[in-house]
View 1: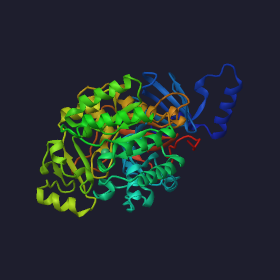
View 2 (view 1 turned 90 degrees about the vertical axis):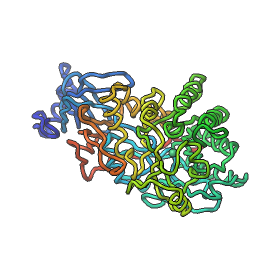
View 3 (view 1 turned 90 degrees about the horizontal axis):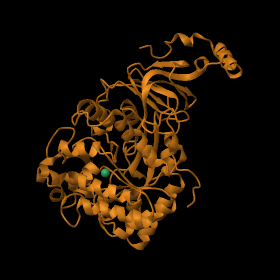
View 4 (view 1 turned 180 degrees about the horizontal axis):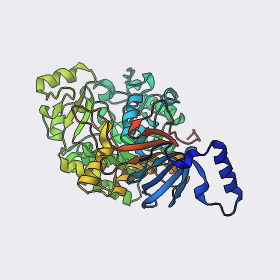
Length: 503
Ligand SMILES: [Zn+2]
């Protein structure tokens, strides 16, 4: 492979290239091969899930956009030889909690060019954007956080995790702010808080309902109505999980479908694999039915059997074992592999400290069903102590495309790029340029080796980067070359809701 700067066509000086470009612009017989692009990716298997292009092509980039997709090799100031490699739109992760700069490196090595915190959201969207500006390897974005809104409405303070006050929040410890019914005034304060985030450009409202079980159905409808006023979607971790009524997975999905229907706000149900467990097929059938009747309901899955959350959170309120048909030994401390006993659980849950634990709850059959359904987009739910942060996208390519052959390459790419872009299109017109490999699209591109791409992160070593992502480009700027992150480049930008900022 030639890699950058190895193509003889680049031996022109800038002036000569300019001359070639000028000749090209005035000469009738000019061929596209004379044009000089800023960056070209030559001879790869180019896949665009929207037009269904899947053929050997060359891609020419000018500035931050794709300018040409050609059957002929192109000439560029920088050249990537993609022979034998897949050239795909960069992956868009709608569910990435860890928004640290270190996490962005791991995401890039997994093929992700945009990582957004849509489930929990962020407490201060303007600040979230400001502290990342000019520093991020990949694109970022977030919703306004209902969990933060509720904690503040109850007069508590927020525990923030990364990049100071503007990072994603830890799920709040179980207590009055999560478990009690809110007064009208406390609901009004939440709405006001969300209003501020939405006015600043937040991409929707993120609701962690299982983490705030005190929220009534009416409270949640009011929050959906606020999102609807702004024409923004709601991203939600459902109220409850499992077989037992009341509180089954089916009831929880029904609540979200109803809230969307009565408010008009689109709803995206996060991680259907862990929220619906062995009822995944039933939940997907409900979502399919809602969509067939014109409702904008979408969902996602991550390709791992264990979930992860804070042991102090309200997810572990009494009943968590019965609802999931699991016991204490399904809960694991990721750093040591220790499985919990009742005594150990009681001590950790009661401490109020946000210790993140693995919860083993899904067999492979459920994970595979959720990950390969045509209804689900892939989203990682990325946290630093779970392998899904570093491995999700490569795992889909390795496990489902190469090994099981249960997903075609183009379908896998659709679930990881086009579908999440489409989820964002009602919020920002810029999303029409994402998740596509077409002329005019943003040059967010991943070039990977389909024979070797693989996740390497494990439950014991969750921060091990994936392998096989040979080149990654964000907004026209290479950020990974020959599998290595390039130091000192920060092309990532905020993805924000379009104005008007007023409902
Ligand atoms: Zn969740």
